[in-house]
Length: 242
Picture (cartoon, rainbow, N blue to C red):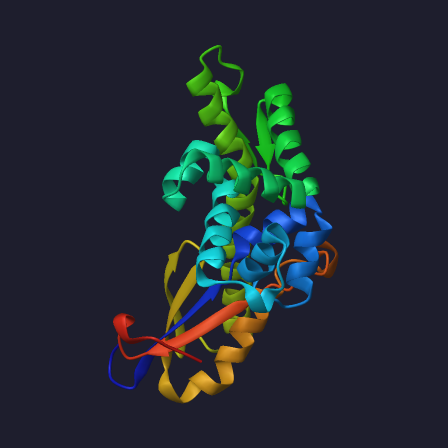
């Protein structure tokens, strides 16, 4: 950053999983977020049937793998490769996961079924994505479309949220005559990176964080806290948490 300025970055924490909980309405997943627990340890505890204080690092890694994998329609074979385990263990973990989060499992199946009927899925804000291959007679084409159909509402909603946050932040900057004191440089996936005057960080950073965390209404959040993490630094490679 230029002399007298710093880079200021904010990114959404575990938003895909939070949105999966919101979309599916799975009470176990919702409660894990509402209680402020580490989501991967919480899921590992439920799936493996052991207290959270007994969760090993390996258990947490396995839970994290499938937590994110299910958002991309990961099947047992892909799970086996990612966990670097055998087919039997991967199958058991997969089955145990969906037996634990039954509402989430039903939501994923309903999403695929609805996409086969309508040909599209929608984000939380009603933006559609169409899938030409969802009714294909070729299994691999159909499976690919189904995986995208599962992922699209979640990733698409996150994309919507980030863009709405950009608009809201821009309006706040103009309303408070901060243009030039803070400027948006980059949007990368779920992260916004600004350039800011050093002496404005303490005053502005909390406001940006609050705006980004409140793009969704309380009704839309379903009690799931939306967390935005901030970091600051002289260079992009040396950012430290606020």
